[in-house]
Image: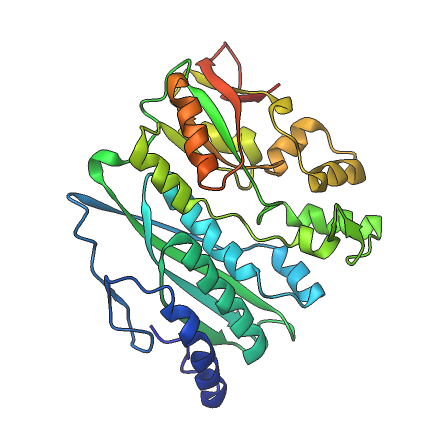
Length: 339
């Protein structure tokens, strides 16, 4: 699909396409039929799937974009865009196959758009998904000068018998937590308020890095390590920790009558979250409902396979903790409790 919308200045559109072609090319998979430039994208379902079910997901980056505009930092939000969709379809056992994006602005600034789409291509490389195209829409009067909006759409596939839906989760199973890279792409309306309240200098040192790099760190993409884990041992359930935090996302994969008991001291909460909590005088319960607090993905496996799963993921570069367990739900109790 073309990146040059009919309403975009032809010269600017052509310049954008030429800048992003090399990056999109690096994401190509053998199943892609054709390339960027057509009205639609053709993709053949990989033959390794015997009974394929397509899994789709769409998302945006939210108000993290406001910080990107403020800081004039556009090279990582594209990674965020890919991560939000591919991590979502991954938790159902799907391998991401291809990705499309939508970039909308009032007036196309080729340099800015190219930075964003290069980030999208980088995210697709991390996920093993082909960037098969997208849409660049120029809509005068819709967006303030220098601002834009993003949306992304991912499609993956999983064999029908390999779908992960949480139905095999049982009392006694182990809950593993994979480290996040930061706040990912959630809670930024509150984060921006706390930054403004604090008056912190974005260039100030924050744990050895400029604060701007910490607060804008791109969302971690868990695809390749978790696909390897799923190929090596049975995974019973996974939850991508986005808006709603641990307490509202883990219940989405649990059957009625079960509770995930999470031990809050079982992992080290990164400095960013401690700072946010102090700045806003936020309770622990609210922190766990608003932010990922350092856990970007939860994986549920049988207790006897927890150590093997942890070692496999660590060998793939993930930082992993056993953060809790599954038990029978008590009367009136929430399906996930952080204690």
